[in-house]
Amino acid sequence: MTTFDRIEPRLPELMDDLAAARIPDYFDDLLQQTARTRQRPAWSALERWLPMGTIARPIVTLPAPWRPLVLLIALALLLATAAVAFIGSRPPAIPPPFGLARNGLIVIATEAGDLATVDPATGTVAGLVTHPASEYAPWLAHDGRRLLFDRRGTGTAESLFVTGIDGTQTRELLSRPTEIQWFDWSPTDDRVAVTYDVDGRRTVSIIDVASGAIAPLDLGVEPTGAVYWRPNGRELVLEGIAAADGVVTHGLYLVGADGTGLRPILPPLASETEYMAPTLAGDGIHLAYHRWRQPDQLGRIHVVDIDSGVDRALTGETDANVNEEVPAYSPDGSLIAFERYSDDVGGGYRIVVGSSDGTGPFRALGPAHPALTNGAVVMFSPDGTQLLVNYRADSSTWLFEIASGGEQRMSWPTKVEATWQRLPT
Image (cartoon, rainbow, N blue to C red; front, top):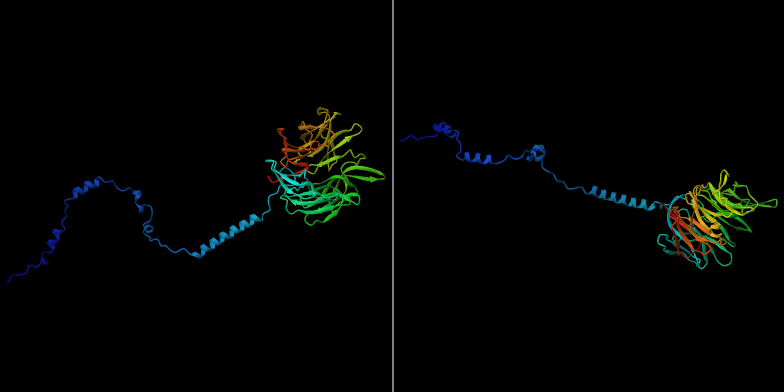
């Protein structure tokens, strides 16, 4: 019988044989390959920069909640609507009532008896108010959005109207069987001072533009021409006559807008030629006028400080052959223009302009016109750089550049009356 050859007794010997260290045959080839291959840059190993726990963390994607998104969209729409409402509710920009402003449209009374607007940059004329009656004497509010004008029907009856700069919302403020002599907007454009006849005597009334309420003023003097609001809105400057003990005097006066506190700015004088064509500067302090000296009949421009009563001749002109008449202030009060009559233009006149304090030369602008032709109407542009002049001698209208002396004759179908719109800068 043969004995079975079991492996267990030989297992330790076999284990030693298998565990012996050996180098594989391809080991030399492997070393040659790795020697030719560059090591991977250290920066390319992501674990060098970020913790491995962060890199290995799975990204959990959750569905976005829809309710906050809807609320966010609704809030954005609400804010947009509120912004539109706020912008739409803001009042339009308006210029200051006094001082320089940007030039807007010019409103004129046409030869046909209507009102029209003129774009001074292009010369474009557009109808504004057309009516079978005659419209004239337009006068724009300080904010440039409304204007006053006279309407004359048959006979001497007149009516004072207010309308928008676009010709809409036209309505009557005052109707009189006789002539309306003067009107002026208050600084806030909510009231109008109007001079007209009441029972054969001239008076000044204050009209509330919104309500139409009319408040006649008991002044103690009879106004004879211009009535101006001071910038404070509480006082009026006017020229008027008074009679006492059979003596009639003419003067320049300051009075409250309620008709109280009347006082003369300068001593009233017997001659009506002493205080002529008064015009108020935008500062509400200085009042320019011209006066005819007796007996040589020399016309001179004067400026008076309303509060102190200090009066001075503007130019110091002494030539007996030179007359100065009808002053007009620039919007900021720095310049003044007037008519100068002299033998240099054959006894006729030219428009001159210069500093309102009387310093420096006064320069002549535009053509000369003959005397005894009722002069000219002079108006500064809102920005103070131009003069709009309408000559009564030939009904011509000119636009003068003050700095350069440039001139342009306009072809507008205008009469004397014109007013220039102020716009915000």
